[in-house]
Length: 163
Image (tube, rainbow, N blue to C red; front, side, top):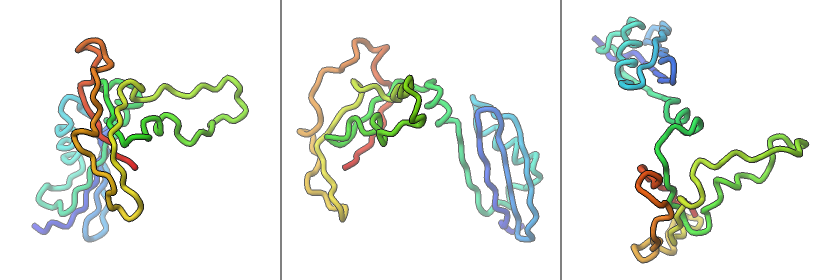
């Protein structure tokens, strides 16, 4: 059997969706409930509902809103951010514009990573992407953790080196 079907699957918090097109232009769609504890089960279930045989799949594209939902709903693990020196507050400042310009009571949302968990390292990448200053172990922050106990410290680290 030729591997000519192109399949795209999106795993959401509630449903998993599939769309497929084969070499004859036949479009197939399917939907099933997501299984948060075992995301692969939802993919296999929706593939079964679609009628696409696994042996037909030549291209498989996967997307998920599970992570972005966890972040925006603040259900994920406590997170720390390591960033280039001088960029610690960029994600919080954003573009400094208000979405509701004339709302005098507007309050910015709480940042996803609290300021005490944003750490800076010295590194610079100018235009042309050639490093003028390399990050070394000496440039990494030396600090005692700002979180008082093991329950409040980050369990996951996300790295964002910008400059």
